Structure formats: structure tokens, C-alpha cells
Image (cartoon, rainbow, N blue to C red; front, side, top):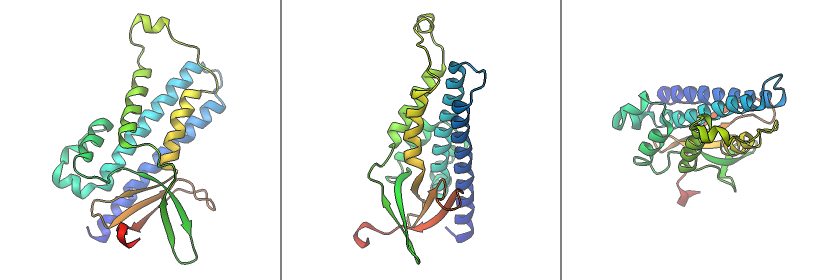
Length: 207
């Protein structure tokens, strides 16, 4: 992969992460200030955003593995379905999914290590997408009659959101060339801005 193509991939990935950040902030905003909206409507809005965020995470995996996908599985560029995308990539690459990391900066270099809590796995993300989708559909009359009250604090939304934040706030994803990584910090400590940079993938026996 040449430098220009790598930069294009990095910019596209940054755009996806920026979209995720906006949606996360909108969840915080509507829970904090729902106005006259019924808590059930707030929950539905938040669940729609979480579902969209999960789809964007899957699309980010496609972007980071663009060269691999374009040559082996072009149809992934035409689908949004995270279950299909993540299952297909798992069959092609062992290390295709974002990993939660800790970034340590020095005056000359930055080092990235796996976080103690690695965050969601690809399988767990697929399950979350299904669970949230099921919650958005009313289903049967019996299910309608059994709907529980929704708290204004939206604990179900917050539980799913926290797991996504733990995965994405500082994460790394391997690129298809296996020599570079994309490192994403959703909010820099100093500038509060989203930052996506390239890193060098160091083999385990050289680290």
C-alpha cells in the first residue's frame, strides 16, 4: 500500500470516528435534557444511535482492511450489516477488530499498549447489535403488554454506551498491510479533538 492510499484510508477512518463521536454526544445531550420527550422515546432515539454506531464500527473495519476487502470480498463495501461484515472479516484476518489501548507519550515517541480491559470483542458487538435491534421492535401484543417503565436516567442505554466507549475512546486497529496500525484517540486530553494517526506494527518478538 503506497503512502497516498494509506493517508486516504486514514482520513476515511477518521471521518467514521467523527460520526461516532457526534452520535455519542447526542446520546448524552438527549438524556441530560430530554425536554418534553417521554423516556421511552428517548430510549428509542438512543438505541437507534447505538445501533448506527455499531454499524459504523463495522464499516471502520472494512476501511482499515480496504486493500484486503477490495481483492477478496468486494461485497463488503456494499453492505452496512455488521453481523455479515464482522463474520466475513473474521474468516479472512485474525486481527481485524479494534483493540482498546493505553497511549503513553514521550518527548520523542508515543507507545501503545493493550488496555487491561480490552473492551468488546467482535462477537460481543454482533450480539449487542442484535439485542438493541430486538428492543427497537414492538413485536407481539404480549410483548407490548409486558413493557417495563423506562427510567429517565436510561440505565440500559448507558450500559451499552459504556462498553462502546471503553472500546473506542483509545483504540488501535491493524491495517490490511499488517505493517501499520491506525491509532484513534476520540478526545485528546490537551485539545479535546479527535485524533487518528498511523503507527508501526511491531512483531511480538521485537517488542
